[in-house]
Image (cartoon, rainbow, N blue to C red; front, top):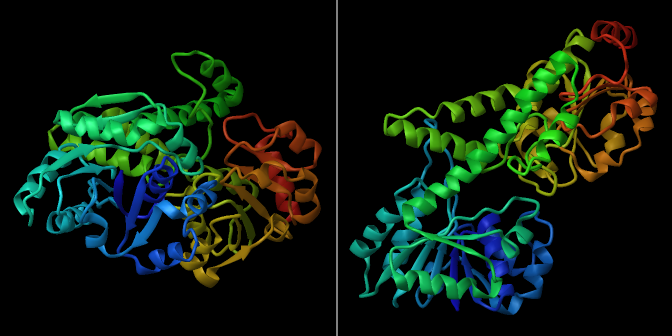
Length: 447
């Protein structure tokens, strides 16, 4: 099939590569000239494991352009995969979605199906159908489908090729038939429903994951108070098939482009109808407080951060991506800078974002050893493989004070104690066997 995709971000580019891999002819369009130039030169502008070789393998079926008329004129299916950033009130900005729909209406010259993959408020698909019909320049029929994505950054290619389901929100037999023809090579199960229900499935799924993460973080905080081990608790409850193991890792909260934004948007949507989603509000509140967990744990060991050297390991909101949107690390770096700390940052994929955001206010390091050398505190925000595999003895050998505050529970507390570290994690008993005030006193003598 002849496919056009508006947007070359994580969703659009991964979707394009996967559809091309299944034999479709795909044209990607984006208003960002630099991204199109890089893609045409064979450079993938985002970090996503497996994406670059997939694009390279399917070059003959992939085209990249900023000419929307070239992309939309004869396309059988046009997918909308542009960003819907949050507004201050929690709702989302749809300017880019409506601009794409306007250009589709003006340029499409054949009957086509418009599939909205962007995360949009419930009811947007119905409005889009009316808009396209009213603004069509040529005598063409538009069928609008809600086709939400459920990929996770870092595993996006696998999540697309091996998705647990494909959700189709349709209002005609033709739309269902065309979309099933499009996805037939994937051989995946379908959920076929109306557009509003499909749009709601996207929000409900993401916000449920946010609820699950905030819940396990709340339990982790209680575990710290009573001396229980959150990892044992998570294992015990995760074995229950009604609950499941995924998204039960305690830490410093969720980030990224989806869970924070979608939680706020769903809450705002319900509020616009006079309904308060109390569970969603609680999840957002817990997540906001949780992102300061590491600074709170570090403060008892140092009187202040002014003139202290703080190593930050990981700024991407999760391993396997360079995305730093809503990353807890960024807010903590900002606070550390404001408090006068000397901040060194290491991340294998996202240092470019750090440099652009903070400039000379931080030192970007290419190696973990460079970041922790002579540091007074080390804060771990992302469980990159290099962090998980790092020799614990190197913290002791290189740091001025071997205080490691781990927001992703990367290490075994007993192993950290054996390596001579002052080690704090989330929801687990301290491995040192010392009371916090005793450890704090010892740190003060060293710093």
